[in-house]
Structure formats: C-alpha cells, structure tokens
Length: 469
Image: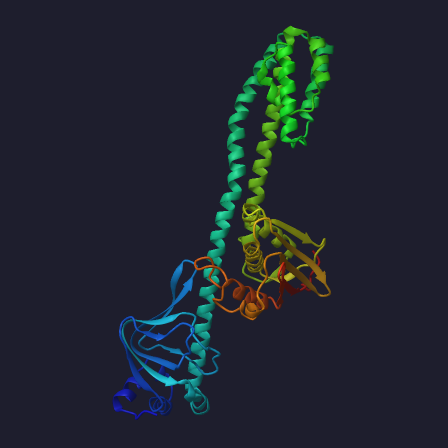
C-alpha cells in the first residue's frame, strides 16, 4: 500500500470522474494505488495479457487498437480525467488489443487485489465505475456491430455487382440486337406485302411462324445437337439457294426440315427468301424481347432481394419476421460466391413457416454470417444447406456444410470476440460473437455440432404470438 501524498490526493480530488465520489472514498483510492508514467508508444496493457487493475488516467492520451480484417483500428481512447482497466464486477480478463500511450502519460493504478475491498467500502465510487463499465461495453458492442455490418456491406456490394453484371450485359447486348432484327423484319414484311400472296400461302406462313414463336426460350438441345441442327439448316438453305443469314435463328426454333420443305413447295423459289427472313426475324425479335424481359426481371429480383436483405424500408421496431424469405434473400445475395467456388447452395424452407418476432435486418445479418462462413469452410464443389422448419413453439434454422469441421479443441472458443480461424486479413473474428448476441437479443438459442464432413449451426427462435404467415 502506498503512502498518501498531498499531491496525489489533490490530483485525484480534481480528477474529472473521481471528483463525484465522496472525499473519504477518494482518500481510500489514494492510499491503495500508485502513479506510473508512460512514454509515447509504451503499452499500458498488451493484447491477451492480464489487466493489472483499475487505471485512472491523470494526464496524456491512451488508445486501444484492435486487429481487424483490414489491419489495426482504433476502437476507443482515454485522456486525462477518464478511467479504464479493471472495473468492479467486470469479467474482463485481458483487452482485445494493445492499449498504447499516444503521448507522455500518467496513470494512477489500483491493483485488482484491492477491488473487493473497494466494492465493500466505497459504494458511491463503485456505482460510478459500474456505469463507466456499462458505457464502455455499449461503445465496444456498437463499434463491433458497425464494423461487422460494414464487412457484410462490402461483401454484399461485391456480390451484387457480380450478379448484376450478367443481366446488365444481356440487356445491353439484346437491346442493340433488337433494332437490327426489327429492321430486317420490316424489310421482309414489305417484301411479303408486295408479293400478292394467296390466303392459303399466308396461312401456311403463319403456321410455320407460329411453330417458331412457340419454341421454348431455353433450348433442351445440347451444344453438339444445336451445332448439328444449324449445319442441317445451312445445308437446306444452300440446296434452295436461300439467304444463309436465316440459319442461326431458324436453328433455334422447333421448325422441322419437313415443314421447311412444305413451305418451299407452297411458296416457290421467288417468295421463299422473304418468307424465311420474315419468320427468322420475327422469331429473333421475339426471342430478344424475351431475353430483355428476363434480364430486367433478374435485375428487379436482385434489387428486391437486396432490399429485403437490408430491410431498408423497415422501421427500427420489433415486428413479425418471415425467416424463410430472409434466408432466400440472403442466399440470392451470396449466390455469386457459391458459384465462383462451384459450391451447391441449397435452401429447404418449410411451407407456411410461422413468423418470429424481431428485426428482419438483424436476422438477415445472422443468416449472412453463417452462410458466408459455411461457404468459406467448404472447398471447390462443396455443399452448403440452409433450412428452416417449425419445431414446437420455435422456428429452427440450420446451416450445414460438408467442410473439414471445427476441431474439438477450439469449438468452445468460436463465439469469443476476435477469435478467428481465417488467415490474417480474411476475418475480423467478430461474426460469430455478433451472431450469438443478435440471437440472444431475439430470445433465441444457437448451438453447433461438428465432425469432419458435417458442421451444423442450429438456431432456435420463438414463434411470434401472431406467428401465422
């Protein structure tokens, strides 16, 4: 125990935080600690090292840096007049990062062994310190959740850009091609209109055109079969001295060579070319229009999925949440990552699944973290399954992967803050910690079972009192 000097007592009495405590309790603090000086860059408490006691910052500036995916980040700081370190009733063992002096600093330290006596003898001071501890916990939690959301936002943006690229390219390509196709269709229409065709000829052309337009948008032919059909169409066109430009669109239709033979017989050589061009251009224009509709619909679906994933139009209040829809939106957002690794990502959602009370955006954050971790855990051609079913008064969500599993020796640590098995720069170690906190916030439970070849995260959420879909 250190002797109490007038200088120390005066500095503690003028301390911005301690000054609210009764003088006798400040004297108690002065008699149970000591002053330590820190040079710039010196560590007050190192990461994963035991905190030696209560740290009353008399002067200077301390910062805690935490290692995250992109490097070290400042998450909290203390200056003269602040208090940090071990607090009464705190379960803190070691800090998540180095606490470093940013400038020459002085700290009055009360070692941990004196804290039980402080709690017994200094009631008002203990209350002050408990409030500081709770505020510190809220700041850390808010910072961690924000950081994890930013990580997920980056993944979301990258996945969305990848997903949008294909339909956007298809829209651009088809929009350019449709103008050319429409031009050919108009020229062929004028030629047929000027030909003075009989009703029977017009009817037969319409019948063949209907076969083309009714052809399925997704051909069931293999690439080899499609190439063979195009070669056959080209051969037929050459035999009839027809324009070969119609070969590719005609090959994509279900028009048979027999139908083309009958068309040639009915029309004769003079009108065959305009008719084939009209049929092929009409089909091509129709096909391009359908492709534009499909691509635009894909863009709409992606935007809707992202909107549903982020819950951007929801108020910050608890409400009945459709877990199945949230899982579907999350799977769509992460679909590009699964495809890039040739991973099969399967969804199994029970029909008419009851809703749960909560915050849709937060639950989607849970699904995102769990599915994303599962995709990281499996190799090329792996398998991930996300399911949701009703079990009693709960909705149970399972995320299962066939990766190498979680070793038994670290299984109890995977929910610890900053613990990660990913390479440096690939993970913050915050995801599962936040997942557990968010599940608890929704009065739910999370469990994990893992053996090589099957890891299952299982979440149980109570059904909303108005739980019908």
